[in-house]
Image 1: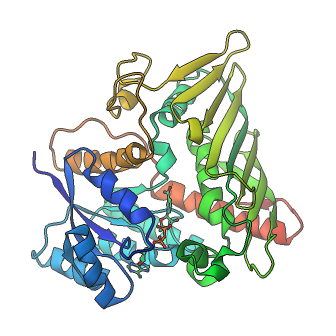
Image 2: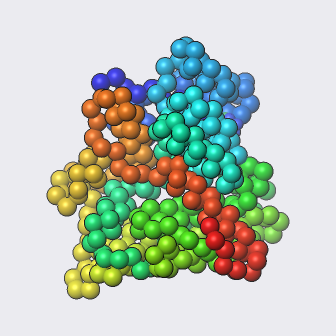
Length: 377
Ligand SMILES: NC(=O)c1ccc[n+]([C@@H]2O[C@H](COP(=O)([O-])OP(=O)(O)OC[C@H]3O[C@@H](n4cnc5c(N)ncnc54)[C@H](O)[C@@H]3O)[C@@H](O)[C@H]2O)c1
């Protein structure tokens, strides 16, 4: 079967972070290849950066799209890994041209932009995957399946968190690229911490539990002097079944790296997962606690999850594999839409989850400004 050809938007330059993670995730299964890139905002630097990735370079996403629509470039989908303000325009342009998009989170800068992308995806039926990397961890996928199959009964309460410490000091003033744009409202949106990692916690709470957040009461803080946007994000939410969600994220928890995880409490049991120990899922049913370990030869994985596992039991799969799984889902969606053989794609976050995340952050920002007033999504 021919490899899918992928274009990358963003990800170039010496200081770049996540473009290189996508590069590895795209190559992971030897069934997809990176062939083209519009890798930086400056046209000359964008062309120069193509050498780093050994792909055909374009000065901007518009010229890459033009080549793809004029038959000069073969592209099966694009991956967008630019700062938040530069997600919407390329996502809209490629979706309108019928080219599938795997887009970084948060989906856009505003709820309106996210709604617009959803209307294009809904009208055209073009595959769209939102890169909440952690949802590609097989144990997080297993947790979602267990909740769906009723293993813990009715969901009553969800706690989801993401604690980091890297922004406990004003790193943005020291010229660190990732800190500069994340704390700048013109490039990140109305929330720094909430949009950047609060959305990961939100996805953990809602995508795994299968329940939407209906309304929120929030307290956002900005602890570091001179910082305009939140670096600490705390939300209590009401789930659509009347349950409770506690969704918190912080960037000022010194010593914490990527402490993302969730606990879901149901009427018959509880689930617990920690991203930094991603190979385990803990299930508590009130008697003996069960720890599920990752491993391709364990029969407790339903086929929907098992078909994503690559490594035999006792070995670890990790971050690259999780992101590779989202590219796998995109590949399966594309191949099946063409009538090619491919396993069923898992229900990974897409445009609807992106819209919900944007509404959640906007409601939390409004609620916090109104001293925690309950605010509908
Ligand atoms: N899913 C995850 O786990 C995860 C992890 C890290 C980052 N991210 C997301 O990835 C995106 C990038 O984050 P990062 O930390 O890699 O930032 P970064 O600053 O390291 O990289 C941004 C890249 O985009 C390029 N760029 C900027 N504007 C551009 C434009 N208009 N056109 C083309 N290229 C442009 C820059 O040159 C750079 O290569 C963000 O949306 C972030 O939220 C997601």
